[in-house]
Amino acid sequence: MRLRPIAALSTVAIAMLLLAGCGSTAEPDASETPSASDDLCAALPDPGEASDSVTVEGDPGTPSTATFTAPLEFTEPQVTIVAEGEGDPVESGDFISYAFTAYSAETGDEIITIGYEPGEVMPSQVSAESPLGQILGCPAPGQRVVAALPASETADAEIYVFDVLSTVPTVATGEPQELSEGMPEVTVAEDGAPSVTIGDTGTPDETEVATAKKGDGYTVQEGDYVLIQYHGVRVSNGEVFDSTWDRGGVPIAEQTTRFVEGFQKALVGQTVGSQVVAVIPPAEGYGEGEINEDDLVGETLVFVVDILGAQKAAATE
Image 1: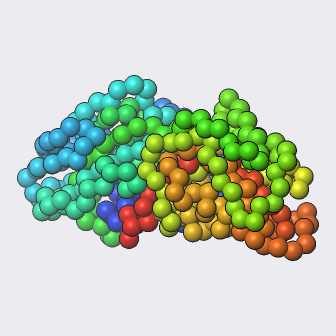
Image 2 (image 1 turned 60 degrees about the horizontal axis):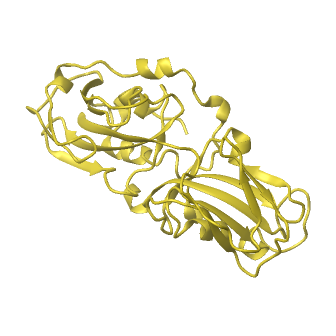
Image 3 (image 1 turned 30 degrees about the horizontal axis):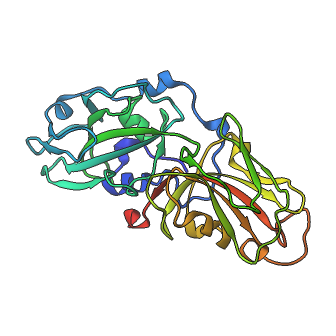
């Protein structure tokens, strides 16, 4: 999905961008992931009279109150850093969690506050070409900025107070758990990529799900959007048929209801930060029938899924 320049974004558009590509079935291409962090730092707009004039109250990481003399008039994006972060700066290609409050530049009225509660905002990947990168540059976690975004043909001028909450790992970081008897064995490489040993795994009557790592984040609900890594294996021959790890380890974002029934069962009720293992029979996978080399009909499948982020479906409505 190609993103528009930040000057063309409205509050609604940015709210949709919080999904970080949710609703799109396009698979990310790891070869397109930017690596030039210097370019990311250079993407930060300069401060200006408008962004400098905003007074912000409240601690970074909590909802803010911004005051300014309205209307503010400006024609180019302006960003003023009001609180520096701590730790290592974000690098191009990293995922971050963030929150913001938006205000009308015309009236000074608050429009929306979002991202400070679990499940409100999906982690997003930043680059010099992404809207977030063009607003935040290469911040360290904890940074707060005031962004003045000018009016366009489709959006009024708006003032944002952005908080960078944290960088988001692209692997599950929950507490390791013992898998139940009969589940396939999962080993994890140093980069987080899983491998599966099928062993005595059979074909259950319905999907069996076990938690390999237990996260402490938001609990995924039916219809939510999720940011995940996954690794899929055929029980019949132990071969990998699909894996985000084989595409550069770049997570994908999608709505839970877009997956097959068994995969949905592996997501709903799980917490962000968890790694789950699911054994999915054909009836809850890709259907019964003749097994062939070109599709997954008739196959019992094993998925290892790392749940990295989630956003309530209601946040997009």
